[in-house]
Image (cartoon, one colour):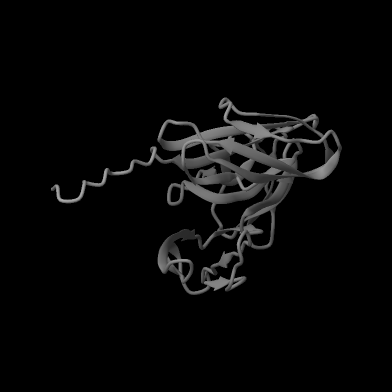
Length: 268
């Protein structure tokens, strides 16, 4: 394993890259990678790595890497499936649990070493925002290896992003007022048409100007009821596709402070 960046600042991202030695090993392989984090608290995280090294089948490239895809658009990648055996090998079906993926399998072509299939994988434009981590299962007529799996990875990026996605209001006394700020970013200029929350203790300020970045002050006035607070804030814009975004506001309201009475002098 290798890391792309050893030190990450707040909101920065890095990656852990692992290489599987397919030259020296065959069959099912698994390993555990331990990631050590030093700040803000020491921690260790275990990542499980699993794979199946096939001696007669490989993929070029090794996975369906869709990358970042704008929400509402399609993305397609082509994969070559190579078979190096001598048997009458055939792919009979391609299965996926992700209904937003479409697969088109071409006819097999004879090569000097065996067979080659061209497979087109398309992500539909109705895919929701979020990470994609799925598998395509190729069903074959080989009883020794009846199925072969290939990973599909990517990320559907919404047109809007809200930072922070979880707004911490702090620990407040009843009646205390606090103002925080949300940053709403888009890929193109947009207008914020409304900000809503089902709690009237929240107030928002917006401008009627189209721009790529909006700063929205959020003012909250703590009520008299003590306890944990969690509310959803919905942001609406004039964007035609994916024009809504949400964030969660969290905080704690303490109970009213009480003052113990002081005993009179000489009395206990």
